[in-house]
Image 1 (tube, rainbow, N blue to C red):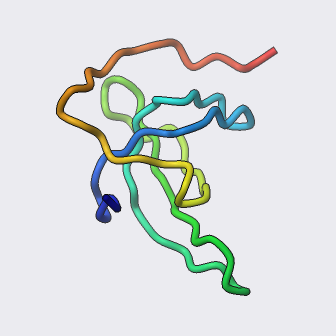
Image 2 (tube, one colour):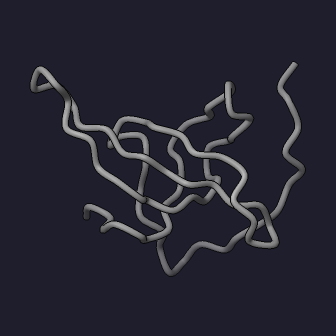
Length: 82
């Protein structure tokens, strides 16, 4: 199932340069076709626990997944890796 624009999604991998972890939730805000026919990308907006926008990030479409009804949200501090 492909998430639609403006739906919340979960990351399938860590994105260290943005201090994001697999399972973090973001909003899908745009789709970006690959210029030479490769895998499409998506643009995500990341919010903190109180709803403030904290980051925008572009990833491959295969690196996100829709949220499921059998999942629960959690919180963690956003701290730099290493």
